Image (cartoon, rainbow, N blue to C red; front, side):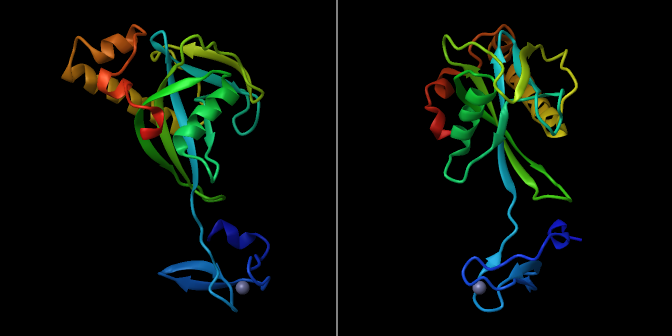
Length: 204
Ligand SMILES: [Zn+2]
């Protein structure tokens, strides 16, 4: 059963009529009986950021539910007037109090939920802007850098998946060029080839 069927009836945003359930393009949806309004069920869009510092990655320990007390990547929901890359940078400012520069796209992931809209996540790799220092924003108890072989329990399986994809990207970069990218990243040097570094974040 769709999670929204247990909710109160919804109303048309154009005429205020109670929506009725209808089959539209093969999907069961709520639609207005008087006009063409359809309440489409779209996923939420979120960002997650792997910020590399000194060969480790930045995690925050959550001061809010869900996952209070557990660790997570900085990130959060994308506002409707916001590019996902801007949302990723904004969330870093809010959660780890640090300006970051996005250096590449790690992956796009999907979190299927039964009791709420599903989520599409966009994961970026990033580094601190020169001079930026880490501290906990209001939604975090603390912020720390972890090496990749000593990660703490994470609040969200999707963030584990993002870190796995990040590790895979390091491994394949190392396989392609053993002396350079991945090895440098582990030593805390700028992680990407010059070509990618020269791109402004918005073009990701
Ligand atoms: Zn209507």
